[in-house]
Image (cartoon, rainbow, N blue to C red; front, side, top):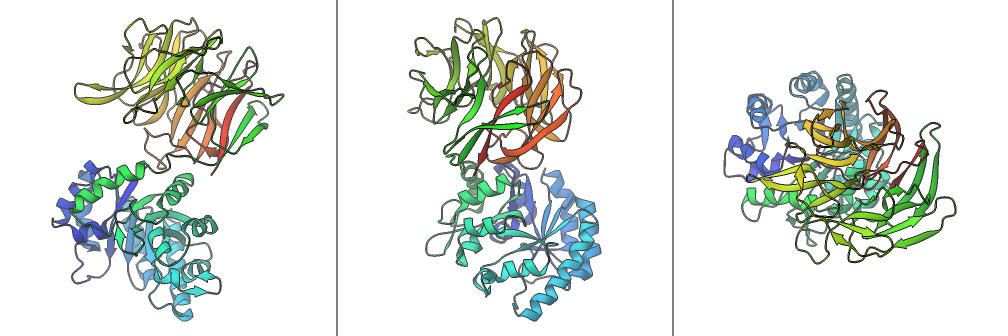
Length: 540
């Protein structure tokens, strides 16, 4: 998830200069900032709201710090008189959004006048590929026009040419239910602004109050919206508060709920068949070549379903009662290997176990963790997996291999970047995987011993989990839109795509777009005929 720090509260409360304040943000996990910029000077708020010339002077230094600006709160009157200047700023600094507010005078005359200014400005910005967003306060949420808030009424007046940047803190403060508000405005929300309050309506650190931040977080992630942190409360050190927010936001949405759909798609006709709808989260179907069943995980356990009859059964996994979506079948389909994190373990961890179907007794294979399984070699001798390891004092994420019986030491196959999703080709000669070695997450392939590491895809997506068909001819993978998350993230509840290509990398094309992500296609789910594969879609 890409967080943007809204700078008004940070700069206004920081004891340091603007440059010293900004210099601290990258190490806290912020890649983007959203400054407030004005065409006029506001006495006493020079640190929090920058004059345009100050903004221009700061931008080279901001870039040197590794920070980016794609959204700017902009203060000007009349707004349309500065539209050309806004376009110049957008082209010079890569700005995608300018943000304005509902006028304080909320009479019909004032709102109509502002709407004309905003639409005129929005039309000029749109020609340069830039959007104008309207940010809400508590006042325009509390005030009503009929059954609508004034904020929504103002958006209506702008006729779809101005989009919404919803500040969920002010939505709650103004008396609206956050989830309902977002749901009824989902077609025009372009950015999510987080602010939090306690029950007494006092500002608190984001994630520690009563505002429904978790739903808003999932909503923003599902629709690929920018996440803007608007922190107003600093009970102690400004930077301690800001540093705590990325971690708290990252924990949101981990307890997934919702509905799941187990699907099969025909890659030749594009026809999609829904096998079953579940009122819970299921993930990662494997297609058993021998029985025709689909194996999937749910709530830490494994199940198998016959897609033709609907008959379903539980698969015994012994002590492994917290399996994730990394289960892989043995070549003879007499066993399954899983990634299992002990429920009573401290912190985040995962180890790889193998479990024969006839006994259901699990055997731990990897001595180190976290280890996330993805491949079982066709000759049955090795497992390949993603390992998080401290190497010379630095956390590295690489592909490793280890003998299936756990008798040998793990062998590191990649070196550098974020490497995951390893899977053997049907002939056992290659390992397919994904890596950030070229910047974005892309599909790669290497020899089984780690040699000849070759990038296969090179596009403007973050591509995960390449799965090669049983006949070795096709590869399917899941793609996330750039900007919706960081290259090393594969999150649930997002708009994603499934892509298909030939095994030599040619004919890369999108099959479908759908609501899914983590859990949709983490493991190889090709049918024996190499024409169909299974995947999971979700309903939030």
